[in-house]
Image 1: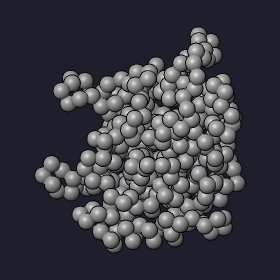
Image 2: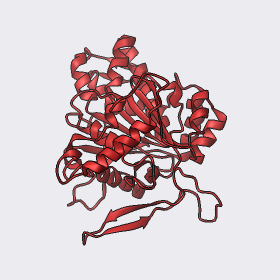
Image 3: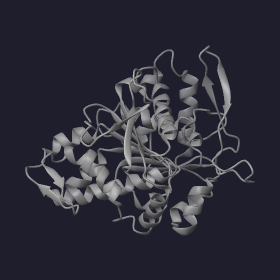
Image 4: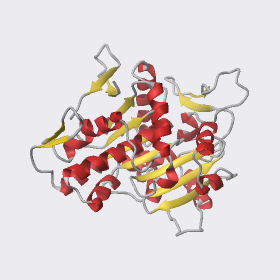
Length: 362
């Protein structure tokens, strides 16, 4: 079965703890990392590494933010089912969702809409009480951020479709359900979904490298004019899809490495494993660090995903997409980023914004 995990306490012998139905309280900031196609229940090291990576991203804003955040990661039942879902969703992005996505909604989101509702054996809701007040559900959903990488971008959209279906069963109007789902923030990295058709769902940013071969293969089968033009961008390009969504594209470098601070305090340059085997002639450019790096000098995507995650976690209300990618207030404090680094980042973002639609400002 697909499973949601969190890090185990240090005193535990096991590295991970399974999160059961109803245990996502959304009483404080919560990040659920929807991982790539290969992160199955048989790959606990991948899950543990995913959780560590999210914690590291959060703590780049200063130590302690990850401790104030509930961080969880999702693992899938099988790669085969994941590939089937990619084809099924991309063929029907407005309505398709898998049984796994519906179970995710029933276990972790439904209790915040109606704690008296539960599915029967056929998947139909049995409703034994009234829905929670909409304002209460909004507050809960405003604490949730979905960090979706690769296939996770598809699963996040399946969760959206499954949530809307459940909301119809609960009696929400179309306007009410859209409002509630927009309170959830999504950061999509290396998307293999249909971002041009997902413009008015979560409050979200979608980042796709123009030379990402995995995303490009998807684009050849299910193409759109918007993605086709974005694929030819030679520099950072930020396009507003709607008031709730930004599409961000840029080429990424072939060499893959990142800087890590060791226990002795020294900064080391460490190579990142490539997705394709060493004997494969071409690089995939689909690896997660391409999208989450903070190396300004080698990647136009640098800091964007990190800032979006930090801003989403620390938000007090729903953010506009341009607010998600703005430098966080905590990094403007003495001892964090230098004024030069902030100015260079803001200049890079401003230069990448497309002005053919309504203007975007940080």
